[in-house]
Image (cartoon, rainbow, N blue to C red; front, side, top):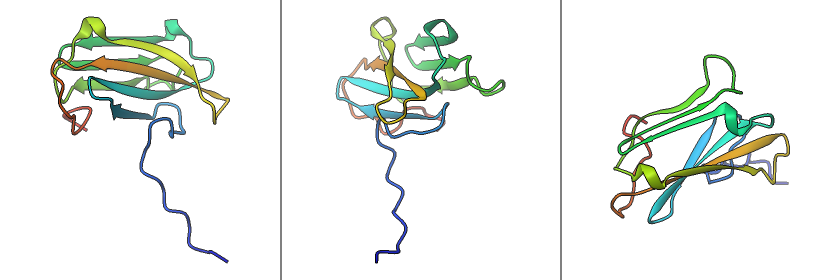
Length: 118
């Protein structure tokens, strides 16, 4: 039998488990950030602040003290007016909702990280 434990996979988009965790992927012209939220999260409990070089995301349904998921300087500049966010149901985890944030890059180049302080 194969007794070696499975290697933990690199964090792929959509493969996140705990509320408050996030992943991101570079789609060329845009960056898509996925944040796991508790099932009861509604639009009005989420606050996204887009600035040209800064992103702040707050999810009020997370544990008190941990409601700010992201708050920092982005790797490169974005176009705040074009940025959007929406909810998606998780196919693998019915008890969470996924918050999908789309950041539009000011210049199309590969991002090495989401935030400069990560």
